[in-house]
Length: 301
Length: 301
Image (spheres, rainbow over the protein chains, first blue to last red):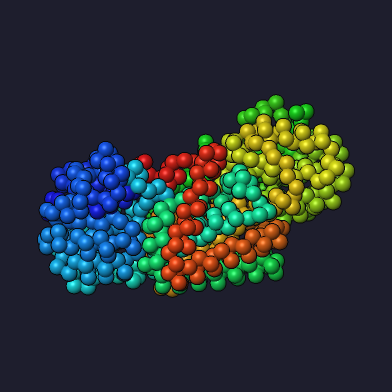
C-alpha cells in the first residue's frame, strides 16, 4: 500500500472508527478530518479521531492520497461536488455507505478526474456521533468494494490493502448486486425493526410501560437496531429504494403465508419453517459472523 | 413460603433452569422431575437438574406441594389430564408457558380440585433441551402470574414468593391482557424474525452464502431469535392465535405505510419514525431490561 495521507470527511461512528483504526493498525499513515458540525469537530479533536481536524473541508483534503466520505449516503453527492476543486487528482476516492449503486454514480459524476473505489464495511453499532467510534470496528468484518467497470486496478488494490490493514476481509461486488444482498441482510431487518418498535409504541390497549417491562421476550433485540442513526437510515432507504421494495415484497408475501397458517391453525407449516431457520444461525456462528454465546452473552451464563 | 417439594414436568431450558435455580437459591426445597423423553431424563440426571429424576410422571408428583408444567403450551392440557389422578389435592399447579388464557383454562379443567396459578417468566435463550438451562435465567426478569378469579390468595402468595426467591420480579395480570402484551413484546418479534430468516433462505438472486457472510448488517440478530425451539413456538402461535393476528394486523399496516413512504420518497416520514423509536431503547436500558453495551457487547469495545 502506497497511501500515506488519508482524509476522512464526516467524523461520526464510521469516520471516527476509520481514523482510530488507522492510528492503531497503520500508524505511519497521516490522517486529516472534517465534519460539517463544529461540535463534532471539537469532540473529534478531543478524542484524537484523526491527526488533524480542519475547520474546512478543502484544507482537510488538500494533500490526500485517499479521501473517504463517511457522511450519510444522501449527502455524499453534494459534499463531493462542493469539494471537487480542492481534491487533488492523484487522490483515490472512497466512502463507507450502506447503499452503493446511487452513491457510486454520484461520486463518479462529481469527481470525474479521480479513481473512485466505493466501499461498504459491513460493520457498525446502534450508536452514532464522534463518541461512538472504536478502532476494532472492522476486524473480522467484511468490506465490500464496488468499483465501476474500468476503474484503475492499482486504485482497487490500494483500497483493498487499506481495509485489510484495518482488519477487514475484502470482497469485490457489482454495485447493483451489493444493493440487493444488503437489502436482505441489513436494510429490511432495519426496516422491520423500526416498524415493530413504532407499532408497539402506538398501542392503546398495551401501555408503553408494559412494552418496556416485558421486552425481554424478544422485542428488546429489535429496539437495539431501531436505535440506529435516523439520517443514515432514511438515506439508505431512499437511495436503495428499488431493491428494498423488491425484498420487502417477498418478506410481506412470506409473512402473509404465515398469518394464514396461524389463522387456519396449520401447526405443521409453522413447525416446518421454524425448524428450517435454525440452520442459518449455525452457519453464521461457524463462520465467525456472530457471538456463539446464548442470548448474546447477556446475564450470568 | 411453605413449599417444600417441587415437581417439574418437562426438563428442557425452562424446567432445567427452574430446577437449577431452586438448588441454588432454595437449597432446602426438594425437587423431583420427569420428562417424556428418556434421553432428556438421562441428561437431566447427569446434570443434576432436579434432585430425583423419575421414569414416570406419577412418581414425580406423588408428594409435591407445587407442580410446574414446563412442557410446550400445546401439550399442557393432555399432560395435566393424564397425571390428574396422581397429583395430590394439596399441590399448587403452575406452569411457565408463554401464552396464558388457553393454558389457564386447560389447567383448571384438567385439575379442578387444585389451586392453579399460571406463571410466565419472561426469560429464555435461543437454546433448548436439558443442556440449555442455567440457574440465573430468571434473575432481574419479570414473572407474570395470571391466576383465574377466585384463586386462593395463599396459593398466589406462595407462587409469588417462589419466583421472587429465584430472583424474578413478580407481577399479576389478567390472562387475556397478558396474551395481548406478550403478542407484541415477544410473539410478533419471533414471528417476523422467523419470517425474514425464511425469506432470506429462499432467494434465487442472493445466495445463502452471501446472506451468511454479510449478516452483520443486522440480519444476524434475527437469526438468534429464529433459532428458538420450533415446537414451543408453534404452540405459542396456535394457543395465542387471536392476539397474535390482531397485533400482526397492526404491524402490517405500519409496514405498509413505511413501504409507501419509501415508494414516494417521503424522507420526512421515515426520519420521523426512525427518531421516535430511539426513546424506547433508552427506557429499556434504564430499567435494566437489556445490556447497555453497544452491539450487545460483541467484539472488543
